Length: 239
Ligand SMILES: [Zn+2]
Image (cartoon, rainbow, N blue to C red; front, side, top):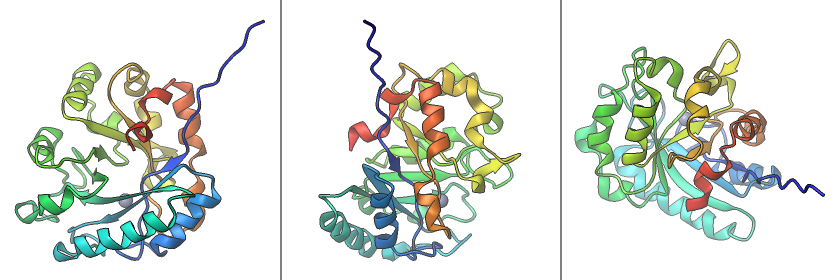
């Protein structure tokens, strides 16, 4: 008798904004939506130090971390709450000279948006590597249009850089970060098809801002992970 054992996909949403930056909902409401969706992990990842949108100010980071830590303890029997931030990779909108790395190192994860994105003036990946050296928690590329932004890179070389620098990739199924009504990762299937059996980790995050239903809306990313057999690449194994 043939027994097929399906490899489990840990349900997570590691990209959500709250009233600490430009989100409509409190961290508590986001966490409760994550519990409702049966997730194992939920992360609060508000904007930090960008002048593009409402953002945690330079000196507001420790207060934010403290607040999320209290919730992490309160909900520890129901869900793993992670505390992260999202940093805008544009040097005109984010003052990297001021970045308080010691405080950033108290976070569980740090997302960078717009890396190597010409339209949004995001710094190239090679430049991020110098910043990444100062950050101890896992660093991830949020909703990156890899197929476009890295169209001049060979995927095996890109993977080697991501592995060497411990940079993970977020799958963002939200149409907020899409083209032709399709999430960006579908335009880089060659890249994702090469990730299996590499050390590059994958997260799922919906970049929730104004619709609480988005917290639970990870189905397309789950299907994608299953299609490419990326269950062993899930970042949840380190949390
Ligand atoms: Zn975001």
